[in-house]
Image (cartoon, rainbow, N blue to C red; front, side, top):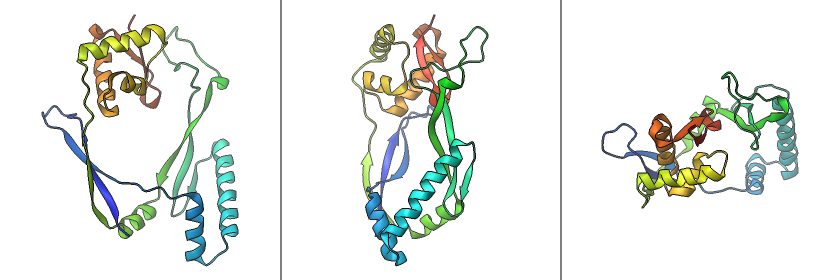
Length: 207
């Protein structure tokens, strides 16, 4: 069976005047039931057996990560829990005078997965690619000044703004919105400042 690849256009991040391109796989969903059925058929086992093992692995994996363990499954990869502030809390900071939060304000926000090299190698060996479609950058009809104005109007009625909010307000693609907000936060005249870092970064009106 063949897999399709898509040529994806991304913004010019290096100032060359040309947009960049990267390639991603066109994904086709496979349900849990279909995966169980395939494993049972090819492994000559009962579906109930495979379901029982996977359910047990899922439950114990969650428990181990909840207890602070990093779990390595040979041939699959390494898992550990990621922490962050609750969605209804603002990001903590080390700056003097900034509010601090206790353990009740922190929660598990995701699971980090690092694939085992053997899994990557096996996937590469079994993968046969054919050309799929092309994905272009989504353009916005708003000028930069109009986009900044929309951001200000949003922040006047909301405590903070994240990248998805800016995407929704301006029509920019997520990569373009991320880059533009980063540049606006570095420019005091924009009236927009950033707080936090990485996945916890958000934007506020500059005081």
